[in-house]
Image (tube, rainbow, N blue to C red; front, side, top):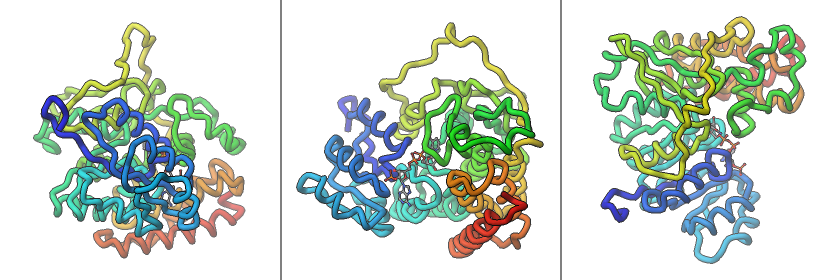
Length: 395
Ligand code: NDP
């Protein structure tokens, strides 16, 4: 308990060394009465993980890459238990002393530990949107079965979560969800110039400072596509009622339109500490170290429609979400492979969506209620995408 009698959350942080992980440490530093980190994980950045373990005083750390175990042990002070590999992530996610697991592992590597956390009755704060896109049906069914909350960390979904609080009529009262998109670095780039976009240009996001994969996803608008499918699972709403509007200032983080025509929006500075703090202190609001907006400094808030012809990702996501089954897993896996291929300079920037569309077109849909089927579809899509990346007509 904190001094004011409110409960302190004990948090396991998966992906501690990444962008969201570091922001979570910043939030925890500001709120020692509210948030206690009890476990941290990394893939291979053991230098940062060890420094974080010393700072936070956690008793448990996990390293996903087994080849880094020895180096991690050397860097850690006595008395910290080291968990290793995929199994180690699951052990960390199910620690008896944790109340909440925040999963901020890039891609789908966080799926197994996330499910293990749910099965051991812990609330799941979700930054890793890919796991909900890949296995939304499995994850939400597990959360329901075990009576745990899925707390959105992604700023758009956290905004919707905040707007919906107190409107428990839910689906019946909501007419649509409106996700805002910054538009990325190529908002004004003519469609015929996108072929020449470099990796460096794509990594230069105008408003958010994030990890590499999500920055590329923001440039292609695949990030918005992934978020549309994520919203469908988090809020149980049909894909046909999830819209996207480009809002270049990234001050409004998303909106809910209700059936009476009213719209609620959530606004804050572009700092992931806001949604992380709300997810970890929910259902309370607490004073942390975050600066509110100064409206006299805001020149204006702009809105424009997405350029669907030049950026097909939201359209592909809508198709994946409407057709459902294994198609969202295929959409996600093909994108992960294509992003890596773009960063490795094997394919062009528009090659990313050409690869994804090719793989989606070839997929034979199956139901997605079992984890095995979803994992199989994911693996199939990765092979197909790797092949498409080598094909001249996709690159
Ligand atoms: P980063 O690339 O900055 O960090 C990724 C983290 O995951 C690191 O801790 C990394 O460890 C770890 N990791 C990578 N691969 C593996 C693996 N195979 N097994 C275990 N751990 C692994 O990513 P972000 O923080 O930007 O994003 C994390 C997630 O949050 C993504 O799903 C993203 O879409 C989502 N998100 C991010 C936002 C942001 O502002 N950054 C906003 C909203 C959502 P190591 O450092 O050791 O490599």
